[in-house]
Amino acid sequence: MNKVFINDSFTEAINSYLAHKDDQKGIVYNSFLVVCIRMLVIIYNETDILNPYTSNNAEILKSNLTKFGYSLAKVEEFFTLLDEYKKIEEQNKNLSIKIENPYFIDIQKRLVDMVITKKINFHISEADLRDFYNLLYTPDNKEPLMISYNYLTAKDKINEVKKYFLEQLKLSEPIEEEATKNYLNNRSYEIMGYKMEDIKKLTADQLEKMNHQVYDFFKIRENAINKEYLLEKAIEEHDNPKTELTTGNGYVDILLVMGVICTLIMVGAIIRFLVF
Image (cartoon, rainbow, N blue to C red; front, side, top):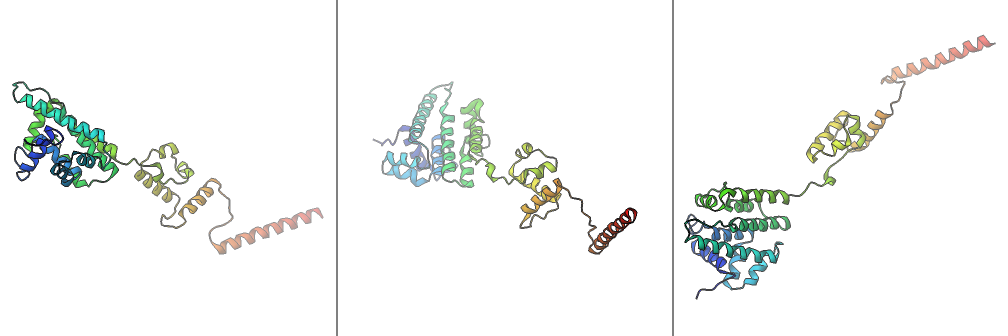
């Protein structure tokens, strides 16, 4: 009597994987249950999947499937879904009008959850993530057998798994923290005609470009070590302009000051003459 590992569906899947892994273009290797094993191998590794089977230790397998944070309860549900999928497929073999098999999509979503859990809590390479996606039953799949099976089984939901994967992938991306944005003095944006509420809506890249414009507006070199201080001084000077008796030329400024002093002396002399 052949041993049953976890349940009938998982036993069939892993036995078929082992028997046909050298025939990668074959029908069995690209059948749904075997593809599920192949996706598990990408998420974890072949040793994590095969060793527990070889030693007939289901608890080790379950432990391996939870090592990246996927819960044990969900692992148990995953195995149950595999079995329910197989039961419907067995019935469909004898039916001219096939029963819809909702577990086809549900199981793939659980596998997506596993790979995203690993991405969030541990790490998964871009290559492994791409290889995983290429095994999902989507219209993007390059394997004709898998494309056909997706159309036959998912029916009007052929894009559902792809959509779910992309949604979960987007949710797994780190949210840009406000702290990563480098805001300059609020007044600098106001002087240039921008409202701070609009500035806060900018992405980090857009804000960086805006800051370049600010420094350029105030004629401050961005490679200056004290550029923040220079910006503060420029804002202060903009808001509090001073009238200075200077031309920018030292010699001319001296003559100008001397002229003012002479004028004051002459005015004083005239006043004294008129009074006395």
